[in-house]
Length: 251
Image: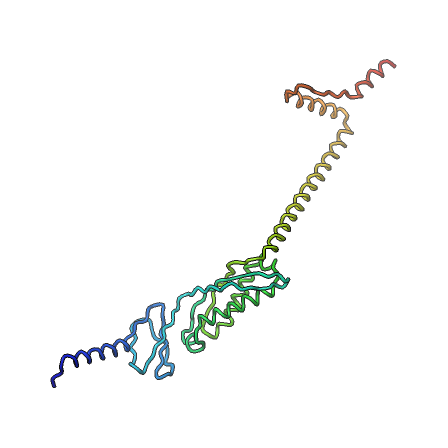
């Protein structure tokens, strides 16, 4: 039987199409979920996969870590402070069959769960806790999102709050509060210094009262320090005790 050139080319094209649909290559970081006439037959890969044309259909699933950016959410905290908050979620597929069979789009589903969980958890805590204990909030978010996405074959490894935007009025109030706190600490430190100095002065006064000559020595030392400054005028106080000595001699 003799075929013309066009027929041969047509047959070759059909064979090429059949082979291209029957032979698939799955990369190392991918897995192929294979369906035969609509029924799940298992997971294939990595490597070369042979499928039955028209009968088999394969869905590729990546096993690499996916970085999901959670958009900004407007939240009112438990102490009635409006804030804007966003986060980032790191997750990967650990069960390709569940990721294909149990949910239509696991990336979109994980994104929606992350958004609702972020709003819910942020609304249950006060602003101070959200600012001071962010690591604990991140762990709580990771635990809730991981539990909710587990039926889809998803493992959430990390959830991090990226940014937290406060209203301008709240920023000014927090700045005033921080300034008042710094002034309070400064006054306490100054008062403690005055108290310690007063204790030392009282102790020195008791010692000088027991040893009057020590007061004269201290007076002479002070005059020496004043004289070393090269002042043009020095006020020299004359102790009354010196006059008592002359009055005793006259008597």
